[in-house]
Image (tube, rainbow, N blue to C red):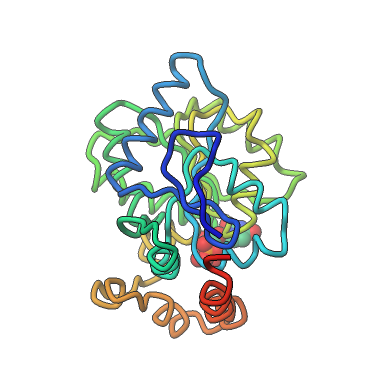
Length: 255
Ligand code: UDP
């Protein structure tokens, strides 16, 4: 299935019914900047940014709410070589991978330059604090509004949102893994006291050094998933989504 999203100005491609915007990393940062400026001008409620990989697309085949959550987002970027590959196959290629882990330091630099305040929510206790320290090194002058592990439990939502409100953050990064983090943002979007909220998966684990990232070469040739499988074998079941995704795109891609 391929097409262009009707309700927003972005150039998008649909991979098995899931929207992907054809944005570079730089354009992604520029768009986030614009969303924050819009919010400061009093225009918008919180806007969601989603980084989509093949596992997301496969989850979205079974979960209509998750699919809706992705497709309504202000920005959907291709996290994962499988997505970039699928968009090539569909004849509307995305220019490059835009992963949460790579985008976070660039987002931190934007925040440092413009005085936007960043809040890091999620990961195991203590991890977001170390990730925040690392981001401050990478983006001198960065204001971390707050860090909190919390949990994606509905019962905790109210208290977490109060913390974020008190911290006066502009941008919220949520690391609860997919789809919990995206659905958490989607459920709470109307009352989230930030301009932009983005699910970042394991980004705090990588930034803090708690998890090792695949070597650059492996990332470049699209084998980051293999490295992750080697480091975290418990992911094997989730990763079955990758060949299923490839087969589905090949069979139905142009649908
Ligand atoms: N996580 C969390 N609370 C939960 C489940 C997960 O804080 O209830 C965190 C976990 O510690 C990790 C991140 O969410 O930092 C998920 O990372 P993963 O690499 O699994 O992300 P994904 O591959 O789903 O994007």
